[in-house]
Image (cartoon, rainbow, N blue to C red; front, side, top):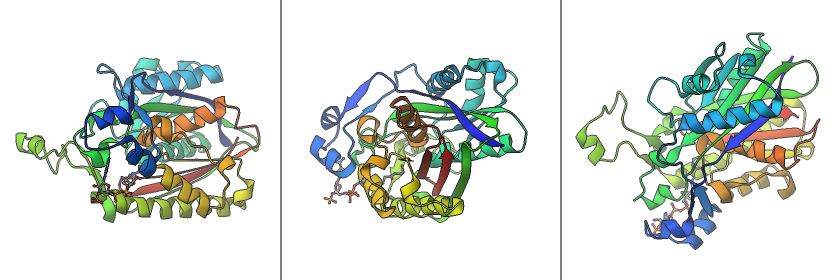
Length: 325
Ligand code: UT7
């Protein structure tokens, strides 16, 4: 049995924040942002919109594509680090919104790798027979944890959600492998320090901006390229394939320079590599399912095609999956 993607969906908020908008907020320029990141604009959730709202729409769209109802869902796994509340899990809110009463639901915290870590969990459940259909969602409202006065980070991130619906099926199509890694020694290079048990809520903590993202961009960049390349090769080697066999490489969309460097190191062509970072920026755990949905709607994924995906994020965490479409 394999976990096959039978539906995809995504949701991007309507509100577009361009680089020119950011020029009015911090000391930056459209040219700098495009040259260093490839990002031209990003989406920002409406004031009354949360991660669960966007995740619900993306999930419903994936279910509609597959012709599946809420009663058919056994499991909902959500990769997010910007949930509606610290707890309960945002996946439970999505479950309630969808009316997926028989599904069990939980979040996975793996930052930008969250979707692939969630996919791996769902794949394991389905292959072990613990369910027939799983929704795997990546959804983030990063605009709520970005310091909009910090030019080092605020130009990078955006909001959005994507989802895939997995069904356990016999045959050649489906998830062929998931490879996951973590290295906690780098945790401080990319993190949100408050508020948790280490730094509980306090007025001083707000003054010190603990609830906002901090990142050592340069250091993260180097490890990201190395790790995404290594874990992509791991996926290909484990399944007996080479880069030439890949129809679409859908990497985590953090920075165009990271994507181009990784694609080059893997020996992939531009045509094999899917890029939409210019439109949405880095939506963390949501970038890969949004990109899969876009590629699917553009007809870039045909039955039998090999889809390679890789991600890297805070933790550090990194991973890959190889999927036969
Ligand atoms: O999702 C996974 C996790 N995140 C990532 O993968 C992000 C990884 N890192 C990156 O994408 C890049 O490191 C950044 C885009 C964040 C930064 O690009 P960089 O080429 O590494 O620039 P830098 O940090 O070395 O900064 C170069 C200069 C600095 O000025 P000085 O010290 O040379 O005078 C920065 O202060 O650019 C300055 N700078 C800016 N200038 C204009 C930093 N941010 C900006 C900005 N606008 N927004």
